[in-house]
Length: 292
Length: 271
Image 1 (spheres, rainbow over the protein chains, first blue to last red):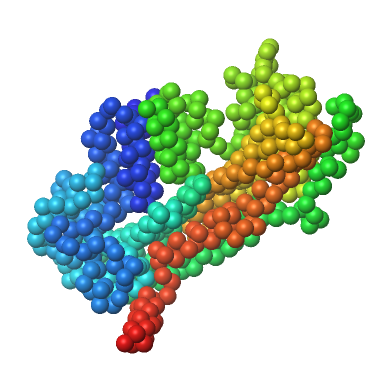
Image 2 (cartoon, rainbow over the protein chains, first blue to last red; image 1 turned 60 degrees about the horizontal axis):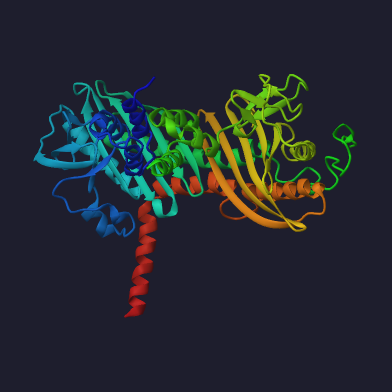
């Protein structure tokens, strides 16, 4: 039988967007008397890296609120207020770097907070490409994701570039939260290349119920010339196509599968005449009650 | 403290993926075995189908027709595996149960055009209670599938010439879609609504009609009548809106320029 730590870990890793703290509180209540949080550290780390947790850089005063009070001038001041934690930008145990701000920082995975910031100089043969990708991808991200963080990192011994984006919107007062993640990898060994990755959308709505949308869209794009602008324009097109496909799927599912499950009204367009169906008569015995 | 743990368990199940409720329920009761009984009777899960050996008809399994490891068929009133002294309704309530099964069988054909349904009644001190279960699955093509489970639990309390009905309805819906352009899309969940009402009762036959109309109206409302809080609204409207909140199809700078212009106009008018 699975241990309490294994089961609790699966709860942590299954936390919907923006609800990690609520899940942690429930886990603590269910395991009362045990100090279980330290043994869940690996699960917190897996969750943060898989979900591209966005943390505030230590010493920066920016907050996430810019999404609501957005204006062009405010964007320049507050954008990149949060940086990504992922499996692609970890330097050593729990220390991550952000190439855009050229800072490395330590992450407390249980609280999703960053500390001990240090300046960090990117070491990569592809530093120029990474810088121009950050610039182009940043323009694209700001143009389509009201509240997002992104990063571009050299991985696999500097042979592949990872481009990641996470966009979160939390509205717990209205019982919904959502997350959009895009994770791409581009081998940079030759002049032409294939960008592969996945787009994930997770939406949770939980007023008087529990409804979840979870999607995974594999992306596979051949890149003719490895330049930041052409890569980002191909990514932008793929993301737009995907959002349009998803919007069509809502309509198709509603008109198709959903209608096939239960009719809005019977084919007669009349509601059921309950006094006439089933043939219940007082005093009639059960075996004789099938007089339809 | 057990109450607090029970509440936390329900909160957790309301947050974790509704597709995995069964697994998560097992995990919670492994951690806190004392919660098992209470959680099994208050957490709705997709219904399982079993074939009644007597009537050769399918029926649905839930906590209300379970006794130990056996389930009672609504068609034969027998338990499977057989039980010597399984709990069955009184003669009067069983008669109502048989009538309700017949009526809801017609209802199921009219609205679901297939699927499986079962109605179970049981006695209360001052009336009776019951559950109406409906299940339908579709797989049009191999790339998409849908499953609907309705669970309507009611209590009917006797009053003079009237009966007080309290209905709690849950619809569990699983929708899956896959295509080249879409990848994998899973839209799953459950929604619960409640209604209480007093209705006139002339004879026992009135109960079946009253409960029938209550369930019919509830399913109609939950499916589509009300603008908000319907399955259609929540599953297809809300989910799409939130995706639109996460990502803007059009460039945000256009939208912001418009908003900025509007703001400046308002500012200049206020001066």
